[in-house]
Length: 358
Image 1 (cartoon, one colour):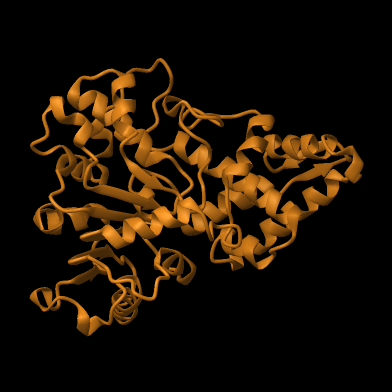
Image 2 (cartoon, helix red, strand yellow):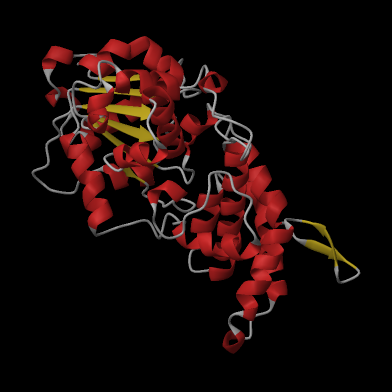
C-alpha cells in the first residue's frame, strides 16, 4: 500500500494507456458524430443518428421555446468544421461560452465519444462474455498502481486500501473506478457488493464531471461501463458534463480538491497536460496556504525540456504554495521530477519505491 498520503492528478494521457483516444483522434470522433447532414431533406447521410434524435427530443420537449432542430444540426456542422483548429472540444465550447446551442451539441458529442471509447477500451467486457482478464492491460499504469495499492494488504483489511490515496481526474470517463471495482473482486475473491463497499472509501474527484455513475455505485444517472445508450439516455447524461466556464468554483467539490492538494505528501501527475485553467483549479487560494508535499512526480511525454522546466517552476511556485527555493532542501533537484521521456506506466517502473515508500 502507499505509505504516505498520495494524490494522483490524472489527465487524458492516462486513459490512453488502456485504449481511449486523446487529442486529434478524439476531436475527429466528435466532429464525425456532430456533423449531421441530410440528403433530400430526410435521409441522414452523416453524423450520429442518436445525437440527431436526442436533439429532436430536446426541441420537442420545449414547445414554448419554439426551437428549430435544424439550428442545432447547423451548430454541429460548425463544430465539425472548426475542431481541427481547436486544442480540444472543451476549448472550443469555452470559446463560444454563452452559446447554449453549441454547448449542447458539443456535450452530446463528448458523451457519445466517451461511451464509445469505454466500449472499445481494454477494460470493456461484453455482457455474458466472461470475466475481465487483467493481462489485457499489460503495459498500462493501472496494473502497477494496483500492485502498490494491494502490497501487504490482506483480504481482511481490504477496506483500508484507499486510506492514503486521493485521485483528481480531469477525464469524463469512469475507467479508474471500473477497473478498481473489477480488480478488487478478482484479486481478493470478494463479491461485487463487497468490492463496491471498499470502493466507497476511494476519494476520487472529477472537476469537470463524468458521463454518469456506474451501476454498483447505486446512485442516480447510473449507466453501465461502455453502454450504447438510446437518445433519451444520451441527452440525460449531458447534465453531468461541465465546461471550463461551468467548472466548480465554489462549494464542497472545490473544497475537496483543495483539501486533497493541501494534505498530499506525495503528488503524482499522470498523463496530465498542465493547462493553466486546470492548474488554477488545483491551487488553493488561502493566503497562508503551505503544501505538505515532499515529492512530486509527473509525466511530460512529448514536452520539450524547456517547457518542462517552466511547468516545474509553476508547480513549485503555485501548486506547492511556496517558491522553488523554499522546497525542502533534503530533496533538492528531486522534489519535483517531471519526465519528458516517460509515460504513465514508465513513471511507476522508474519511481516504484519513491512513490510507494517515501
